Image 1 (cartoon, rainbow, N blue to C red):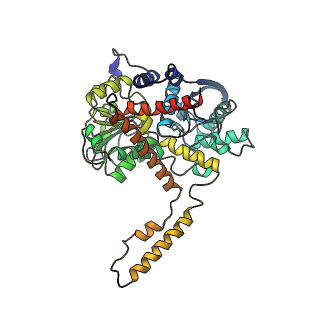
Image 2: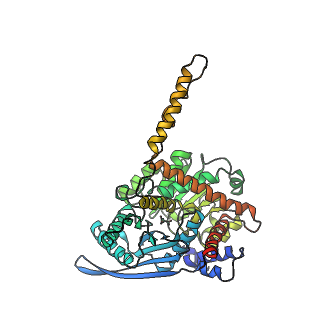
Image 3: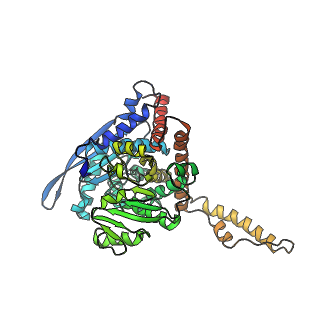
Length: 479
Ligand code: GLU
């Protein structure tokens, strides 16, 4: 972002508002409703002290509630030293639109704590997290029916388990207490497939995009995901899983990986697992053998590739580099990686952008499944699985009996029996639900993208669908 000094780059919050304004200008909302939808309903700042290393440390955290047209409100909690009110509000707004787009029955919210988690050890982080959770829970900003946090940058299963436990200590008779937060570890009320969910959603989104030849053509591409050269920025939870699934299952090549300390480039394709292990052991990508190291890693965003996946921070594609971005297709795995100014430049160039509120909605979608599981107190598939298998067995036995009959000259395909007999477990059901969600939401966006002459990009289509749904909800039930 260094060479944008003489250009006016809007902040994240402003960027989201600019995109929202562009969308509502194309809508016919009742007077005043657009303002009601746009603004954040409430943002709480909490400051609390924790005694650590012999001194009292004061921490600042936020929880912003953007829209309560549906409750609970939903959205992650981010741990980063860059967290601030504007960022949390922009992210909360995106949660509202994201949930509406993928039809998870939530309003939008987001939380953040100004902290660099690397500065503290595990025990200290637990104390800080529990205290933050206490501050939020006592204000009903963590609550199974009102406000349900989840992981985001800098947090994961571990923090969610502490938050859930803290809530339970404060609400000992609440039978639904597990549903107060999602993204918990599987052995502590979580659901199979939540950790991979956002990256998996990115894969499903791309697979759906590549099912539509017209859309592929709009991006100036052809064929399938097989052999596509992909650059990923950020090999954190989201970037790693997206890259892993796209290489292992769809035959794509990861030709560039951008990390904090630089980037790796290899036109023949990088070994995602090996790079991830290298980062784990060395704290960065520098020194990894099977690639060219680029010190000024961010420039690799501008390299020649088929698909660019920004999967880290907001604002990485901005007025300073947008004109030089060569990828014809960008999928926003991070929230807000393209600023409003950059978005305009890229649209004019004809770059197709699969927008964040759709592309990274896999996380909240599987959070929704986890929340439902917690409220129903039963694992998905537990009642049906064996019964399904028994019925399948009946058919297979019958087919086998027929195939033994000399008059018919046929046999079952190899593996058919094994595949058909196995009832779906929780992970398969979660993936199926996620796949369905990503396909359905894409089709809703696509209908607007191709169906309206005044809508020329997927982001506007996404906003129109989601704002339309939020507006209908307000219109139907009142404000
Ligand atoms: N933090 C994630 C997001 O930005 C997940 C939110 C959730 O699961 O509630 O979508």
